[in-house]
Image 1 (cartoon, chains in turn orange, green):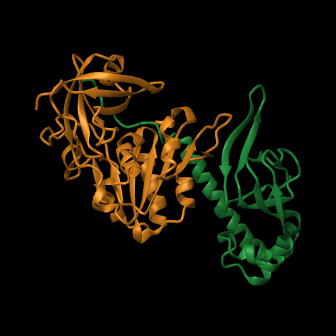
Image 2 (tube, each protein chain N blue to C red; image 1 turned 60 degrees about the vertical axis):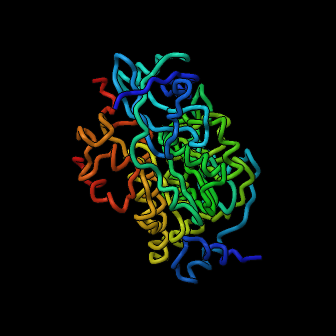
Image 3 (tube, each protein chain N blue to C red; image 1 turned 90 degrees about the vertical axis):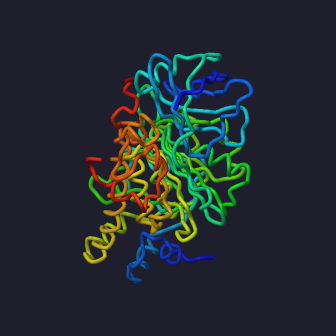
Length: 269
Length: 160
């Protein structure tokens, strides 16, 4: 697949080293459709390509939104780009969140750090009232309040869902919890037969959250998580992101924990 | 209005406890309301009580010179806090202050300490329950120390 040239219409720094880009395709083309949980390969010319999840709303026609953290040469090159600059985009790729599982159930969205980005399209679905969930709760943990993503949107999210925010280190004026995200998750009552959990964050954080969910009796088949590995081709050919029998780029990045728990707990994978 | 014994009986911490033990603990408890900003415990002050938070938020803090109070953890409805009353020198090791109006059951640890010494079965039951809370807090602290929100996997973006 050849990258399509997009223009950066908006760029802002969420916090030090974490950026959000709003991208638009050339005039006349409509290549911004995606399903929540999918990712694009973003190409910084002369530096390379990286997989970045799509963090905007599927119904927003103002372009694709991506949030990323500088982590290597390509993301550093992406961070140096400014509004009006060009960027290559391939995608969208992968299997997204199973939105069809949500109707009539309680939706628990559990995110850590940058893991909120791939879940924000789901939150927009809750805000738009198109998912048919019974009740929605967001559990979001970050190192510090200033490292929480999309803070300016959270007051509007509270109108449609409960928010349980926690940080490792608080500052004066912080109204949420201090402690890890597993705390509020352990404290909440879950209707285990009628809940679905969407989980995204660093793998270690997901592991501890899954442990709490298992202790509470949530069926493994009701837990979905978004995995990341070294994705290169994004089409399941190169094998860089092979994980057990799966290719993260093609079979994921969203998996039902019930079907991948075996691979999730193998240390070498 | 529920009796103290009923309130304790409904809390998971006391689940499965013998009724006479629960009655004894209830006799050592009283309801307290703290306003936002009130200190419930002060570092180095005698620790003769522990608390069951019925409603509200409590910050566990440490005072850092030239900085101020550093919040280490927040505790919420249903949480139990305070185990300094169990171990000599029976002094609080951190401050605890109410972040909003806190409704709590304050239990007299001094009275329970004496009962634990004279009734080892009771003491063991209570100690098992506190050991569980201490283990949970240790686990949470370990996870917090691991900085789990940072990305510490092989770089997805090698730049190649």
